Amino acid sequence: MAKKKCNRYSGIGGQAVLEGIMMKNQEKYAVAVRKPNGEIAVELENYQGLLHGSKLKELPFIRGIFNFIDSLVLGMKCLNYSASFYEDDEEEGKLDKAADKVSGGNGEKLMTTLITIVSIVLAVGIFVVLPYYLASLMGGFIRNESLMAIIEGVLRILIFLLYVWGISAMKDIRRLYRYHGAEHKCINCIEKGRPLTVHNVMRSSRLHKRCGTSFIFFVLFVSIILFFFIRVDNPIQKVVLRILLMPVIAGISYEIIRLAGRSDNIFVRIISAPGMLIQRMTTKEPDKGMVEVAIAAVEAVFDWKKYLYDNFGYEVDESWMDGDTEEEASAGMQEETASDFGQDEAADDK
Image 1 (cartoon, rainbow, N blue to C red):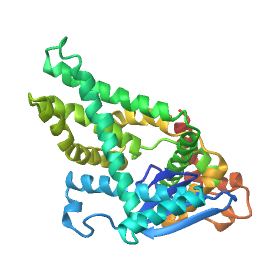
Image 2: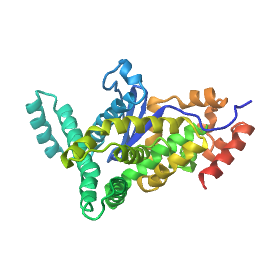
Image 3: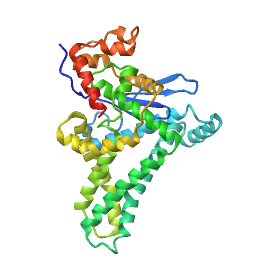
Image 4: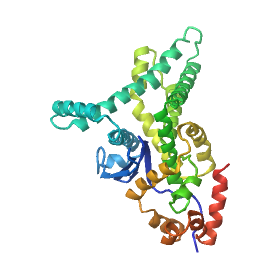
């Protein structure tokens, strides 16, 4: 008999890249990219990250800091890889030669490091310093420090929402959001116990509680709470304190989103709701070609058939994947699982 149907944590996560998807499972990650000629290129690598093997990476609140840094570095590396299929060869060659010359042959690592540093500086400037500056302009009219802290936090969230909405006007970003949706759909398909087919993935939800968008919202929300209680009078010290507290905020936010990915109680649903709403902007419905790319990335790092057997109690019949149509394949699941499948699909459509 199949096990009772419910969402089950898979441990895989991912990121949308230029015309593709990165999927990560423990230390393995794969980047699948739709090349200009229509083929799907898949690169499979290992990424151990900072402090590999250290006990520090297992400590609550501390692990979130290193995981955040690792995700930035790996994400930038994967973006560079996907962009390499669409860059101008002559311009790319000049940049590579210049970077290799400066770094002694480690041009790719140098460029990834520089871009990551610049990205962090810009993020701090836009989402930390700018909201504080805008809020400080109201200092002559508002003397209540508690209210000022709340206004600063609200401004930070508004700037983030405007940023997300603004970049969505760019054609490449809109396609990136569609691949982002394909990434979520694949993970939701697996974690709901469905065979990983294009048909099943397309029917799954494009929203997921462990999304990076939700993580950023938690960062913004936690920052409001910390800055509300931790105060200094000097303006320069206020800015420095906000920057220094970012790793602490990232660590706390990581634990919250980690909990959200492993639980589905009412409290988790409430705190996840704002991030899920924002995901309606940062994810869009993909086409079948995008889903095929996402599936290729998942299958390179994750044995989803074994996962379905271990967690949902049924084996995937290969005939479902080959000879039958995908609609017939879905109907071939065990009766109890098929019934639950329909209930889940109805829930996704709400």
